[in-house]
Length: 555
View 1 (spheres, rainbow, N blue to C red):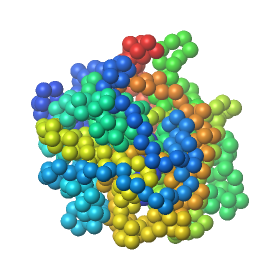
View 2 (cartoon, rainbow, N blue to C red; view 1 turned 90 degrees about the vertical axis):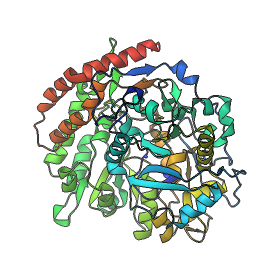
View 3 (cartoon, rainbow, N blue to C red; view 1 turned 90 degrees about the horizontal axis):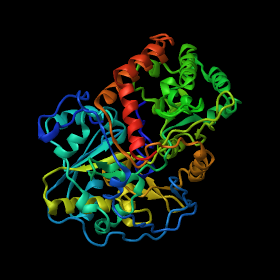
View 4 (cartoon, rainbow, N blue to C red; view 1 turned 60 degrees about the vertical axis):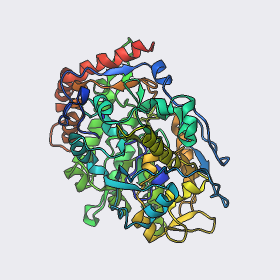
């Protein structure tokens, strides 16, 4: 039910290769509340024409012709690394302001901080102003945000993951109380002053509007699919097995691959992908007679729940996944302790590149998408950004301009020296070059880089071949091209939704109840009661809200 981290990765080497707030301000700058939505917030929907009126005028800024041009939301692909780079930013962004504090999520060992990190020193020297990044554990990021917003002590630049926003108490009030209104700085042709922000996709900017005003800089997704079901294809082939083409074959494959005596289980988390195999919508779909149907009302959801619960009941899911909300499934996957798990596609290249050095035969591949019971699969996705970067309110026009100039530098595109420095650091120190010229991280690079500048600045997404992942770009783009026709239509594209309190406060508790059913702690039959309670406690209010948003926009 909660939008997953689309394209967000939990791996140290994602960088370009990509993907909440638990408290918010009350109106008028009053004290910030706790993490549940407050009663009385009925939500709002900003019309698509009002959103278009405040967006930056899009100005493409591609420096290199792609080898595999993107189509729609699919990014461009490059099969080689350029031998000659260009300077994309010729004027130093810094304007003599003080140190810029930033905070963003990170899923990996925490890099050294400013003063003890040569990568930060090198980038800050180019910026002409010091950025002091605070990287917080992505798995507990909402807790840090809760405390920060409750204290009303936000940094100059704050990166917020999209998948947490809908859980925020009166988030639009928090935006107005704590963060800068960027509309006059970036609306229309004003964005030309920051050309690489103006180059970000319009579809990403549309989600960055709150209360009819432009409030954040987006970090665009590098592919619209929410999830893929990844397999250790090297281990599947070694076992003499083939990829499944039906739920029954997936279950049988799980039985063949699971060997508790050797510490191996077939599956980690897979429920979101199973729902898609069964053709279930992510949240809402239109009913033939009019109105909206929630996924709980779709028989495909129950079928997916029953199938996944059977995987748990049959002992095919790793015990760490069974026992917790947040098993480190990526590490289990790398170690061959689980053979299949769902993750954002942004995780793919980083994991493949790292592990191919440890095990040359390592082969991470998505399981080909299949439908259940003769019906087509449905793939969840949208152009919603992975992160939003907010600027602290009250900094003054000159400081806002300096911060936007820094973010513009951070958004410099592929083919530029700025891109290389941001993504890989300094040659000979943080990376070396493969024979084809592509950067290969050194141990120092792995230690010091944590997407400190990438996640705050946005960037036009691309996929780039590297020496450690020679087949990745073609594999990635082929997967998208084969399946893009299955992607669920976003009924609310271009409409900014600020969700009702009673809807948002239901999301996490209901997810917890479904998790208990999946793990066998509650019977399958409890789904009817969970669904009834959900609809009575805010789901029907949500349905009315979403239906009205569509009607108001003539849809």
